[in-house]
Picture 1: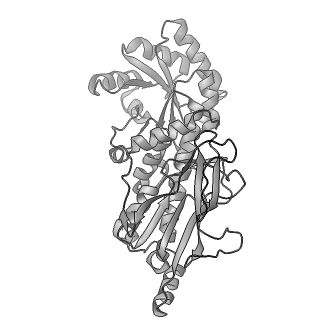
Picture 2: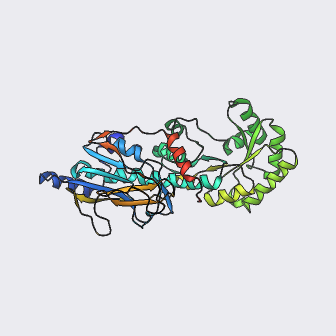
Picture 3: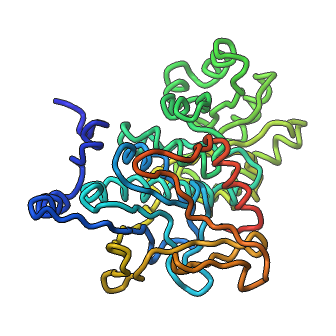
Length: 390
């Protein structure tokens, strides 16, 4: 028996590709055909009006040492469904002899499709939560081998922290969480709260899980009286007992406030998404543990298409031929896609300065751009979220 996962070596060797790419490379090699192509990654019909581009770092790690050039939007760039004129926006392009990267189309798409979907969902939940604490609890719903990728994508999308140990290590943070129902069940409710307070590092906020056995309102008051440094109570009420979850939050908030516990927050978890987070925040929740909706976020259905061969525009039906540039206006934020042989000097909409977004990250297999930290990427995302709605 073994874990059914690909090793880094197997991924880098192209063994996770679809077999027809391997056959294509074999045919090109046996005919001694060398074709320099320009291939672009676009999404035709994304599930949302805007997308957070993620996964580029792993693409560069995969392709390092291959004789290719890679141009891409900076990781964390939020781009719209289409540009100002309705053209799909290339988020990344690979240039080189097609034999060099034919077998990597499948893994490259996997790296950016899933990470971008998770980062986008995280950003939408960040908007719904406002300034409230949001923690990623989703790794238990997915294969453990990809927990670092999941947690990284949720963090750069806007989550304040992640629960898994390895995921936190990958982003250079300490894992965050509260306490499980298992602790309550094995020790009993009050004893579990006391032992957590007694044994766990003072640096960890005291958040008492209160709905294992009793009523949320009365258990919240009991925890508030018992623990002097209680930061918050946590509601993880099962769906079969919730009724109107927002009203439960309102009731708990009212009773805590009435007795002078206005400083104690209400942390909620269980089946949350951007819509429920927004409603619960309005009801009085101050923190959120979000799981499955993050880790099981819709993937962004990117496709890779050759659009130019030996400098000559050529693409299949439904795709735009020729290599391209991508611009974003520094003022109005509109995107513009133009043929690579053309340049735009100013925004066609407001006349303001433009920035060219498809930047060189790899030339001849060597990474040529210093890569930002996860915190820098996250701040870049949060800056772009200002003024948006989920």
